[in-house]
Image (tube, rainbow, N blue to C red):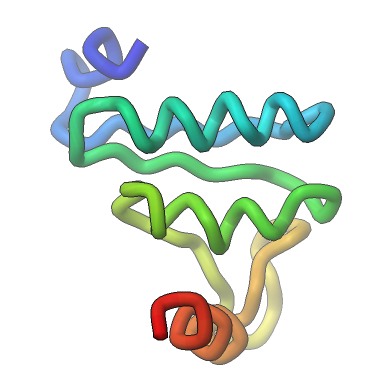
Length: 89
């Protein structure tokens, strides 16, 4: 899938609304194993924790907000930085 998307740009972006934990695991595996750079993400509140894990496995971008969220499940930039600092230390 990523190879097909690279025909349209240098960094493919794949954002999904997971239906269950297995969907999260599939997305994490895809992010980890695909050619870099890649941008992967999730929509919604249910599995928002994946927004924190995906960059640790190779997703180039993480979408946050400063003020008002643009999408459900987004972390504020301050919270995202704080949590990422804890995860990476």
